Length: 244
Image 1 (cartoon, one colour):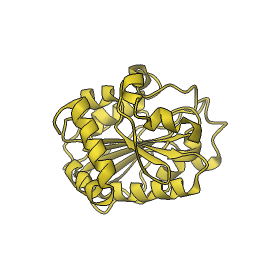
Image 2 (spheres, helix red, strand yellow):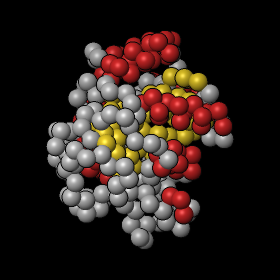
Image 3 (tube, helix red, strand yellow):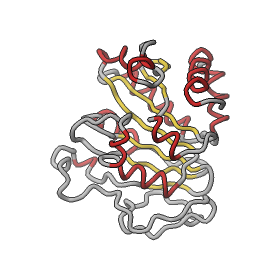
Image 4 (cartoon, helix red, strand yellow):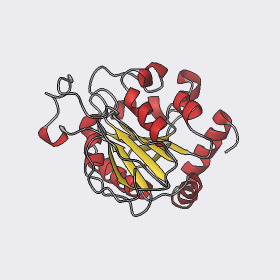
């Protein structure tokens, strides 16, 4: 991607852009637009027909935000990324929609080699410093995500409850360990379906994150705004991944 600011780039299919200051190789002919015969085309409203990757800004840090990863989560999450404004500094790449087919957990490595293969293409090509996945959940599943026994039952730490039903956790350990250096910021957010305040707070957090410049800057923000949750998240991370 060149050093010019891209205010509204097209999907990456056939893109010839390159970043001179971001440190990653350009995408060339990658397929991030939704295929014409994709099974989700008829389900998505006209607003979401263009679901390819877009890139705004240039240079470091490079941020990648992804939504609509599986099942019907796109109904709650895709709109956030379709309407997000460009960052004041650095680069923001967005994939507003991935798939609306059968729900396959992102904790399953097979997700990223199948349904989520374009996410890996983006990660490998952009080498983002900040990677955010946006999910949604039904209120009856709160304990499955944030329950204290999640590590024992599922093998990953429980989400932290931030505010208005919004949960914060790590992305799939398989992706975190294989594709990112330890200094990268990799987060998974879960907003509560049907909760207007949850949606408002999610939008607020995305505005914060699109301007965050590093993992350490986000940690400092969390310690100030959500000290209890920050302590838990740091402790969980250290137990699961090792030193920060």
